[in-house]
Amino acid sequence: QVQLVESGGGLVQAGGSLRLSCAASGITFSIWSMGWFRRAPGREREFVAQISWGGASTYYADSVKGRFIMSKDTSKNTVYLQMNSLKPEDTAVYYCACAPSRTRSNDYWGQGTQVTVSS
Image (cartoon, rainbow, N blue to C red):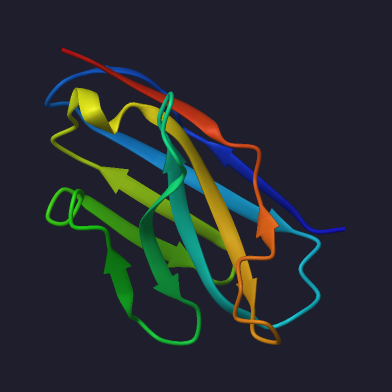
């Protein structure tokens, strides 16, 4: 059974930093990519960042470009999201997702970790 477990969320002041981690277990297939998404109160879930598994490509939402950095450790099936210069509007539950190569779709999701940025 595939499990994605996020960690590293918390409360931080505006301008501060947090590093999220997402560890995937039960992986028995080839991974195409992993991504981070977030859902703020009263808003739809939105894309934050994505990283390809076989290469080094990363993609970011315009709202986080230049502030967030996504990285991976393929030996641990773990991805990270380094979040710098945090803003109150970054407050949300952050979810990681995994896309298998066979579907290239985010078929697996974690439970999320809360990030709260105070002004």
